[in-house]
Image (cartoon, rainbow, N blue to C red; front, side, top):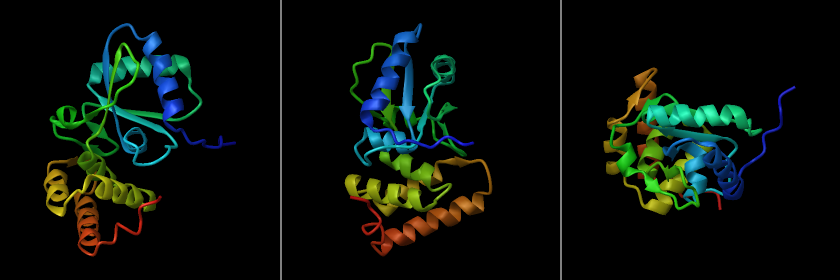
Length: 184
């Protein structure tokens, strides 16, 4: 029987990362993606799973600790700027936003909102639409900036689908359609 998903706000996320931090042997860099990034950036109150990317060796060290901790919620990780089926440009690390946390060995950051939008375009379900709307509204993202960043993304899958999704997002921005999707 599948387990019921619980949502995680900032406190459980930081508690989890503190447990990871205590078990690491060396410093690592983690970049939150998806709902995790949005929660850490105060774009949404919680996430239903935990998503990170980062340098391959750092992700491997993180996975090793997570496998021992068995946190009771889903933790997804991808190496080197991969997020779901998208591959971010190498500058994703520099563009990410540092998150202040009382951690000694984990350097924590969240994807830049443009990268959050670019990675959400790949799937583009209803929740992704809301998340894109929240990023656009809070960070005043423009069509031009979204288009430019999306064109730098590598997509593993049908690139025509990604292009169609991108065009749908840009069209919705033109019609100011995202303002109504942002959850308060």
